[in-house]
Length: 134
Image 1 (cartoon, rainbow, N blue to C red):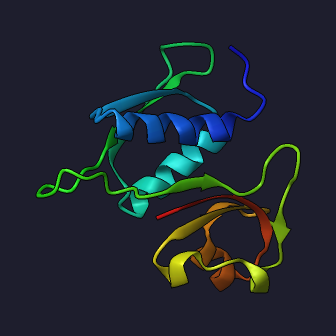
Image 2 (cartoon, one colour):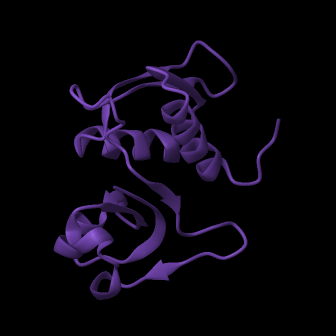
């Protein structure tokens, strides 16, 4: 199946796996998805991940979803796409939105690579607003 928006597909697979209560989710890999996965791990939204290049054409990403130990609720409350293939959204460094007053994370694709909104503001680089998470 060919998707017109692979990043939205990536986010939806994580969202669906959480709703179904799955421990892991397998997603077709790409450079962009690997970068987003690394940011999600660094920010503490996922338990762990593994890039498996032996499966599929470009390989797959296996993500272990993180749940709250007491309430069994998923750590990720909301995942959303900002820039879509039909409507790209770009922002200069000083106008990058703050997600829930800095509690959430916006992922920005900059000339220096994929980074969080805070990193982009610190390095004073703008770029395409890929997605948000909290």
